[in-house]
Length: 114
Image (cartoon, rainbow, N blue to C red; front, side):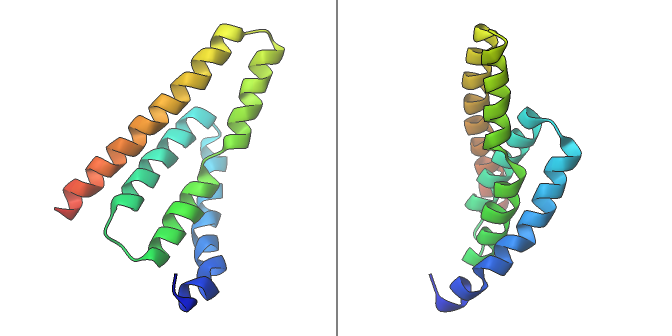
């Protein structure tokens, strides 16, 4: 990574993190916001853009928009309520849907790059 990007990484990531966190707060639905974040991550990561833009969009925007801690808390609550089947379904479905969303974002970006 070049010296300029390292020096500006904090600023570049922050530029994406602020709107990402606000977007997450407005949606307030863990499953939906994580799928949108996965799609955008696949999309931005597959675009032929400079690394500084990937820092802003992939790390900043998508990183602050998606929420592993919120998802983990939701799963923990399901376990505490002894909803084991729902826990298992949620655990598997969000991972599979997330991978699918990243793949769709990747495909969409590649179509735009072509």
